[in-house]
Image (cartoon, rainbow, N blue to C red):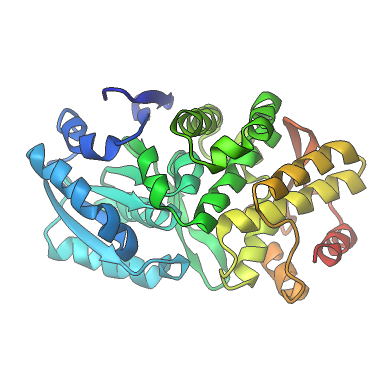
Length: 363
């Protein structure tokens, strides 16, 4: 696609491109028309995103001669459930989608996860593409093929690994993103610097004002860097057997905080809290210097993200969610703990007393 930065997620015959550009939404139809993906599409989007960008994407598809229907659902994490999943399956059947058809996920992480799971299971698997409209989805959830829904017992406990055929990232849509959602995406951005790239971490320290000001060249560079790291990790470990687990930095306690708040704390903010918790565990265990941990916490704070669990949040409930975390094996919870900026290790050798100490200190 013209004027776009392009990356490739290298997975052999399931490899796919990531396109990053300002205004790429209007070019998606023309690009899809050149690819042998599907004969017809259903665009899945929540009601808020559909109102903002549904017509732009549908015009792009129509202009390229592609047949498509727009299907919407109520926005919010509460929609990421098995009942809505079943309702959407029925809707796809009612409009006559078959195995030659495909899906387009237009929206944030909820839409991408839900649409990906639909694609993985409807007709035993149909193709889909990602059009992420939040910063969090652009730098993280739209790449890598993790799909799924929540159940009352926990977040993302039902799902599948299922890769998209392409990812189209339009940086212009970030101008309409609510501030709290933008900051939530920056929580995932900071994660990449801590787990993999100290130079990128320095870039994030240096460019705070331009990033918060959504300066296009800097934003595109930032997103490209995050996607490159994610693509490298996924190509090396698609199904999270080893290396890919580093992407869970901040997510273990973060997911528990998110669920215990009944999702009133959004994902990226919960991850920021979870990263600070993991840093404190690492310092207490002698794995990470206080200076490095303080530097990460300072950057999280500088981007306007929370670092403490709200005092009113039930710690017992948080621990309950930790015990059923999808990353736990044999009842042992795995934590991603930094050993410095740019390096982490994965361990299940964290005692309940250590977790209690961190949970009680946070907030």
